[in-house]
Amino acid sequence: MIAERYRGAPRLNINPETGETLCIACNLCALACPENLIVVGWQRDDLTRRKVLTAFTYDTSRCMFCGLCEDACPTDCLELTQDFEMATYSREGAIWDRHRLEEGPTPARYVR
Ligand code: SF4
Ligand code: SF4
Image (cartoon, rainbow, N blue to C red; front, side, top):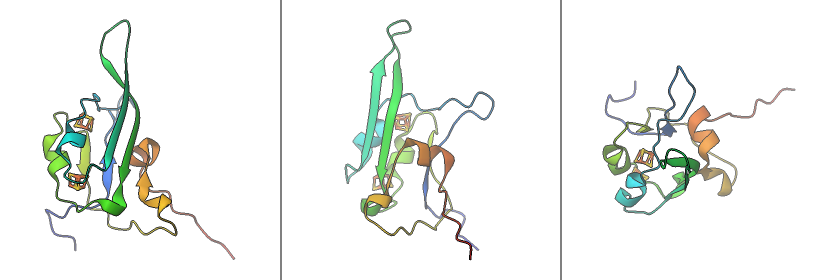
């Protein structure tokens, strides 16, 4: 059993109906992080003048799972889930990109 308030693998939530990200690229999570391990990429939409998320990286190897980033997120887009299986074979694998944050980990399935 995982404790109710356990903070584990990060997730970038999407709107389940539209499939679009809930992230508004405000960068508050990156500013709140004491480890400076979140990088938010964005560009300005010429028509709406709104920021549009273009990339998101989260270095889990440096994260202490303090939760300050998810507390700072105004849209509840960034969430530390109760998933705890984050082992990788390389340091590069610890850096999660936007796709992995949205889709979740996709472990390799080995067959004989
Ligand atoms: S949980 Fe803490 S250390 Fe990890 S990314 Fe969020 S603010 Fe940074
Ligand atoms: S605080 Fe939330 S909405 Fe803002 S950039 Fe981070 S994940 Fe996106």
